Length: 205
Image 1 (tube, rainbow, N blue to C red):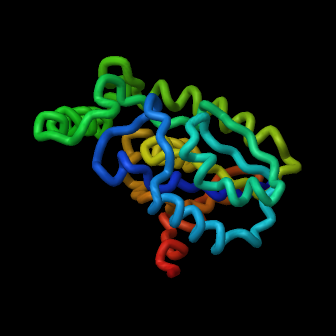
Image 2 (cartoon, rainbow, N blue to C red):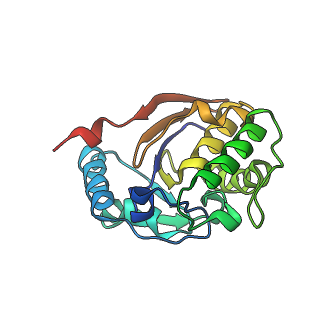
């Protein structure tokens, strides 16, 4: 079985713009810039023959690829693609104190302490469990040769580690911005990133 995955992060939300933590518990809409980004991505990739679209359970992902869905391409929501839950910090503005605790948990993760999490939140290891289940669903359809997946920044970094066989502690090796593309090919044996952090479509007027 061969399969090509087009994996994108959702478009900008107002909380993104304001630097407020979102996470799995914040079901926010795209803002004007996010809708523009969604249109730019659609214009660049509308001729790709997608067999299926997978989005998270959070509406900002579906909004980001709605124009593809409107073409009649079937889609499915998978909660395994949801963003990592940041717990008590979701919805909170960026402050000096917040930045300090986020830096500390990032250090934990980079040092391999992947069970670390905020109160009420999720650890990378917990996210991996639900992502592997989502991936099992996606990969269980050999007839879906070309697939579009819209998800979230931190979650996307973790999924790319899983796909490429890297430890989750290397998640920061996968940079991203809103509606950036990672194209991943599966040859029946392994996954390979063939388009890395592509934002060319966002430069179109």
